[in-house]
Structures are given as structure tokens and as C-alpha cells.
Image 1 (cartoon, rainbow, N blue to C red):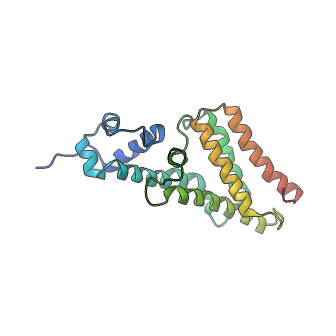
Image 2 (image 1 turned 60 degrees about the vertical axis):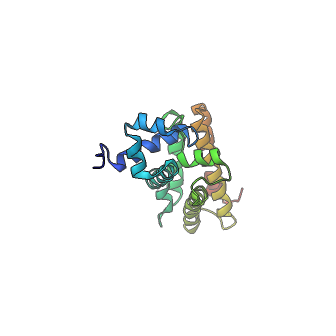
Length: 202
């Protein structure tokens, strides 16, 4: 008779997300997962097969929960300037929140592995594309409503905003001073507000 599980797969995955977010893939061992999650090695392998599959599932879970919550509003058909501002405001305040020292799991993964995608499914590149696409959607809608001039290249601005947000994630991960994080986010907001106010492509 097989051993009975004392946890749900969902609970195990939720805890694994937080451990990987704090320690990274290379910094996380099976022993650490067993100890911190409170599950047997047998149960871990029974649910996910190996560490790589657990990590892949953690990235997917993080994307579905955290990235959906933060960037989903920018992907809506009616998204615009307000959604961009709200996102930057959120990350501006993250310098004093629970994300400090942890950052974004997907961004952390990009920094840890560089050009090598550990999942084999281009998860990191899809993450970059999603962020840029979300910003472009909101910027395109802003222009449709006459708030941005036609001369503004929304793809370039979307890529710049993506780069700024990824930089904020790194600062948050590194426990940078909250003032530094706030200044970066607020400067991004000011850039957009200047384009809207002056009607020029900066």
C-alpha cells in the first residue's frame, strides 16, 4: 500500500513558490523543500517527479497568480493611462512591503539563468513579451483616446516601461533603499505625464 499524503498538491506548490522566490533554483535543495514545506521526499517526487518539474510548476503558478493580478489590468481592452499609473504606484510602494528581499520569481529566474531558459519552454521570454505587450496595449488605448500624439512609438515606450519595471524588481530583490525605488517609479510616471501634457514624443 502506498503512503498517504498529508498535504495537497496545491499547498505544496504555494509553499514552493515562496521558497524559490527567496532562494532561487540553485539555492534550493530537496532537503530544504522537505524541511520547510513539511513534506516527505517521497511525496515531493510523487507529486512533481523532480525538482525541475516542481520549479516549472512554480513559475507557471506565479505567472497565473501574481503576474495576472499585476499586469492583467493592463491587458484589458479598456486599459489606459490609469492602469499604467496604478501599476507604477504599486511598485513604488513595494520598497516597504513584503516583496522586499524577494522580488519577482520570473525576473529572479531571468537574472539567475541569463539566456538559458531552465524550463525548456521559453517561460522567461514569454514573461518579457507579456509585460511589454501589456504596456503597449494600455499605451495604444491611451493614444486612441487622443491622450498621446501619433508620433509616440508605443512599442518603444512599452519596452522602456518593461525595462524600468524589471529594474524595480531587481531593486526590490536587493533590498535597495525605498527612496530609490520610489524615485525610479515616479520618474517613469512623470515621463508619461509629460508626453500626455506636451503632446510630444520624448
